Image 1 (cartoon, rainbow, N blue to C red):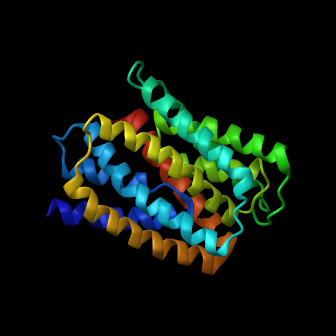
Image 2: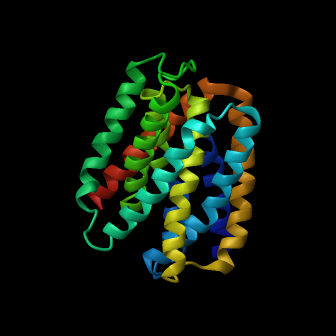
Length: 252
C-alpha cells in the first residue's frame, strides 16, 4: 500500500515539477506520511532518486521543442552542481532552521511581484548575450544551487522566477532552463545521499517510472498551452509553497 501511495505522489510530483517546479511539495510530505519512522535523510534521498529521472526527462522533452540556450546555461548547471554540494555539506555543520521563517516571506514577495508585473515572462527577450549571459546564469545557478543543497523547498520555482526576472526569458523558456540546472543540483544531492547509504533503491525504481510518466504529461501540457499556462501554474505552485512553508515555520 505504501508503494502505491508514494508512486501516485511521485507521478503527480513529476507532472507539476515538469511544468514549473515544486514537485517536492507533493512527494516529500507523501514519503513522510507513508514512512513516519524512517530516517529523514533516507526519505530525502529516495525523493531525489525518483525525481531526478523526471527532471532529466523533462529537460530532454523541452529541448526538442524549446530553444534552450545551452552555451549560456552550462555554466549555471556546473555552478549549481558545485554549490549544491557545498550547501549539502554545510547543512551537516549548521542547522537551516533559521530559513524556515524567512522563506514564506521571500516566496510572498515573488508572488506579489509576479502578480504586479502583468507582462513579466510573457515574451522571450533575453537581456544579455555571450559572456554576460553566462555570468548572470552562473550566478543564479550558484545561489540557488547552494540553497537547494542547504535547504531546498521551492528551488525550481526560484530558478524559473530568476530566469524570467534577471535574464528576460519567458516562462516556458525559463521552465526549460530551470530543469537543466535542477538536474545538476539533484545529481549533487543524490550522490551525497547515496554515499551515506540514505536511499531505498527498491522504492526508487517504481517511483522513478511514475515520476517520468508524470513528467511526460506535464511537459506536453506546458508545450501545448505555452507561456501563459506556465505562468498560471507558477502562481498556483508559489501560493501553495507559501501556505506549506508558513505552516512549517509558524504552526507546526
